[in-house]
Structure formats: C-alpha cells, structure tokens
Image (tube, rainbow, N blue to C red; front, side):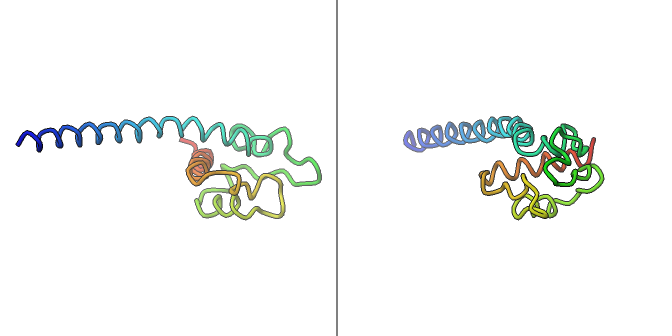
Length: 116
C-alpha cells in the first residue's frame, strides 16, 4: 500500500510539472509570435498588417494588400508561408521556422486579419 501511495505521489508531481511546462510555454510562444511577425513580416506588411511597412513596394515588388482585407483563412496564410506567392521575399519562410513557430505566426497573422 505504501508503494502505491509513493507511486501516486510521484505521478501527481510529474503531472503537475508537465502542466506547468505546457502552461508556461504557451505564454512564451505568445510573445514569440509577435517577435516572429516583427522579424519576418512587418517590414512589408507593417505593424498592424496594413501593408504599409517600410519595405512595402520596394525593390520592384508590389505592396502587399492589407491583411485585414485579404487574409482570413488559415490555409491561405499557411500556403504563402510554405510556398511563397509570386516570388515575393519573405514568403516561403516556413523552412526557417519550427512547426511550433509556424503555427504561432499563422495564429498571430489571423489575429491581425480579424481585429478584435
């Protein structure tokens, strides 16, 4: 009986630790998503996704359409990040990101596309 109690106590502690790690990583990833957007997207798409970043329309590339008007579907965003669109720099960045970072960046972009 004592062995069962000890095992239950160990299991409870491990479960609590796992929940803490999951909870803490979700906060870390929330901060990461904005940083990823700033690093990979903001130069052209702008801080609020309006397509008015400092590099928008430069180097012979068209200015991006505002995210708030043109992107509302996850598949569209993911395809642009995975494959790129019209050979525009910045698109096709997915190989540079982990799957977790890609998901965070897609979710952040969707938030810009659908302001609260």
